Amino acid sequence: MAAPGKECVAPSSLTAFRHLQAKGIDLEQLPVPGVAVRPGDEEDTGFFVWNVRSSRGIHVLPFFRYKELTQRYERMVFRAMEPGEMFLYDNRLYLVKHDRRRGFYLRNVFFYHHEFYAKCEAAIRGFAGAEFMLCRIYVIGRVKKLLGICWIGYVEETGDTIFVKLFQDDLSKFAEYDPRDLAREAIDLGETFAYQGRCWKLCRDEDGLYRVNPVTAPKLVLSRPLAAK
Image 1 (cartoon, rainbow, N blue to C red):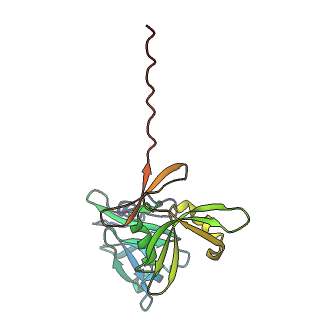
Image 2 (image 1 turned 60 degrees about the vertical axis):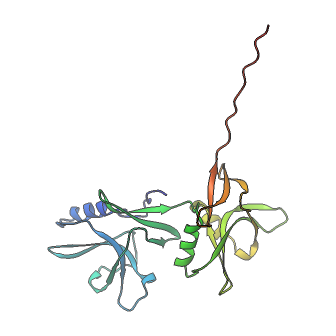
Image 3 (image 1 turned 45 degrees about the vertical axis):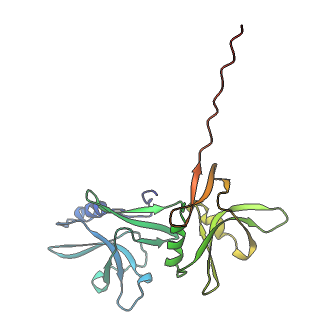
């Protein structure tokens, strides 16, 4: 995980606090992250914002630069987010974290090394209950071309299939193709594979979920030549 990039206006309670202070707003507590929704709308059409109260009323600062966001926040319903909650914005997965020193803060999950993250993204997209396998993805053509590696999820109840990237940086590559033009090859449990300039191994954790672990190449130990007699 990593701190969000420039797409995020205020990645923490503390930065949101400072943004609002700079506008002359005297706050007595750190802002809380949440979702602001217009009455009658579904939550997935809402906006991710920091919310805080002062003597002047309620103040809201968006996480991101929403072009369509109205300034009439008083007409919105606010739901606070909990530590450990995840959400998607612009096809990026974010995690809400909290500690006593800096309050709430955001982290971008750029590497889905654990099946848990793939399941979270699938559930957010409406594919709850998907079972995943890690696959090599190839472009169908005369020459077998490796496009990348991703999680492939299948929902047994509906028959839906969902592609979830392993690395955030690969998203643009997969977006260039129709899934019907791609072939897949499952990576077996315990298999070691090379990708992104490193070696990885597909394992299971204590709960039976897949995870991708880095493999460190063994160090070569050179023996000293025998001294001549």
